[in-house]
Image 1 (cartoon, rainbow, N blue to C red):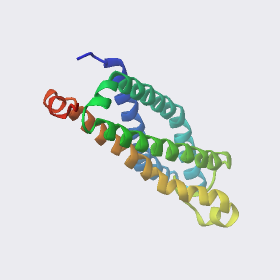
Image 2 (image 1 turned 30 degrees about the vertical axis):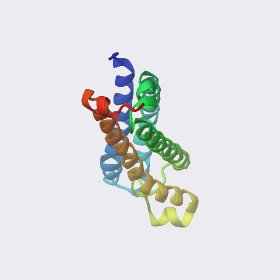
Image 3 (image 1 turned 90 degrees about the vertical axis):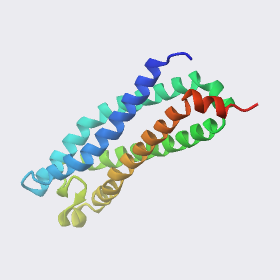
Length: 181
C-alpha cells in the first residue's frame, strides 16, 4: 500500500483548521465581542476578528481541497472496486460542496456587515435594535450569519466523521471483505 502522507496531511490539517476555526469563532469570538463595552464596539471587534480569520480559513480550505483530490486520486482503485467506498466518496463530496457553499455565502454576508463599519451588535451576529431600524439589510445579514456560524462547523464536523469512516474502510480486513468483482 502506497503512502500518501502529503495529501492526507493537507486534507486533515485543512479540514481541522476549517472546522476548529469556525467553531472557535462562533463559540468564543462572537460572544467575547459582546463584552466590548458598546454595541458599536461589539460590531467592530467581531468584524475585525472574522476579517483576520478569512485568509487563514481560505488557505485551510484550499489545503483541504488539494489534499482531498490527492486522496481521491491515490485511492481511485479502491473507490472503483471496494464496496461502500464510492458511496462514501459521493457523500463526502456532497457535504464538502454544502460546506463550501455555506462558507462562501457566510463570507458574502460577513463582507456586507464588515463594509458597513462599526455596525451596532449585541454579539458578533446578533443585530441591535438600532441596526434593525436603521440598517435593515445589514441586520438581516447578521441574523443569517447567526445561523451559518453553527451550520459550517456542523458540516465540517460531519466531514471529520466521514473521513474517520473512510479511514476505517482502509483497514486491510475491510478492504479484503469489501472488494467486489
